[in-house]
Length: 289
Image (cartoon, rainbow, N blue to C red; front, side, top):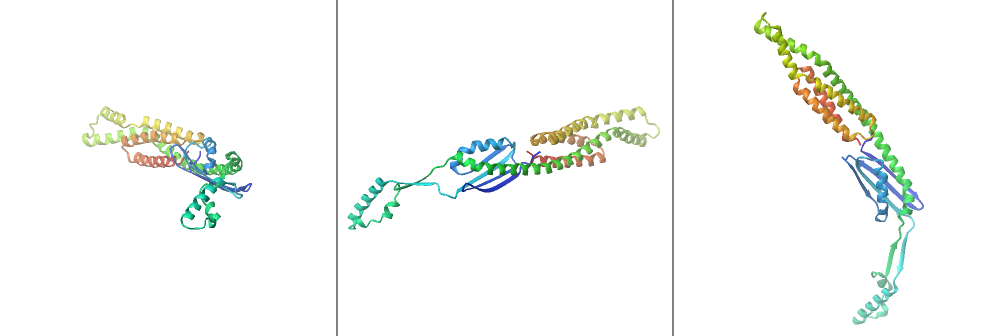
């Protein structure tokens, strides 16, 4: 089980290139990957997405990659023809203003657009050979962070499931007692009204009627089935987030029905405990991948 939140970061100097990789993620219903890096590395984006999606199922993942060359990769090319055109045009203006064309400074011509052209040649594959070891290290940190937090979530979920198991067991044990309690209550009421003239068959009929209306046997069976499925998801499925939410909805339906049928204080208190534990599980499931 993994958490959807994680973080990894590393800076390194490789072949006179400073490389910085940062990776973080937060909760999301689906996998949402955002990659922020220099535009000349765009050819690497699909490769990075593939590496991430092979290990991550859910979460909003932000990846930042920064690259800085310690040695300049700039290439400067001069265009003498453009420089001559600028010189001739500026000379014409100077003569029109009564100025000496020979006094035109070289710096004025050089700073004109197109006279000097600066370009950079980037090889994305060559950069990936430098970035890849840093990226792999950060990705490992990131996955370990999610796994570590996932273990904490798993312990908490299993503890809450234990509470739910206790509640379900109580409901199951209480079911046979209901008949006794119903019969006792009905007998008491008949005795108060009729004294010694109580018809035992009438008591049994009334008891049976109440049991049919308020029995929780089916709900308890389904609840225990959903809880068993939740246990299996938490222990066997490495990415149980979505299915946990589904089984929680099903379990919640049964607990609500038990609560609506309940006629006894003891059961009501256990329903409250079960709903509280289940709500905690549903909240934690939002953090689980």
